[in-house]
Image (cartoon, rainbow, N blue to C red; front, side, top):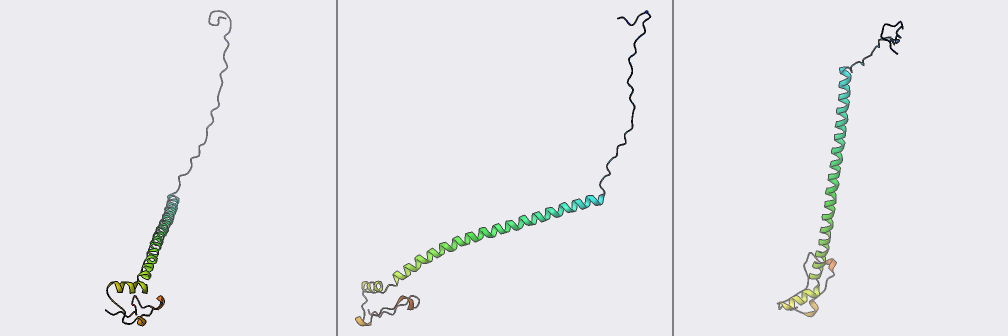
Length: 134
């Protein structure tokens, strides 16, 4: 069809859609007051300080435990050394060995009956009461 001409056909008008404009009220959130911001900041700082203190204490506890384990290992090592040294002392203080060593060095007992053996428990710090004569 031909609409734009001299003919007597009326033009169809497109209906216009009308929009009703409505005003929206936008409510802006109020800014946080300064006092409330400071309260939040103070709370965060306190939490960080408490967490730091806890971490510091746990680090100290860990360090003390590590030192204790190291000391226990040293104690065990020294105890085993002491045991071997005690065995060696007992072997060196054996009266038969001492008599044999004295004989090797040319020492002789004055009288065979003067030699008396003393039990290990009654000995005084490495001294022997065996009478030897050169």
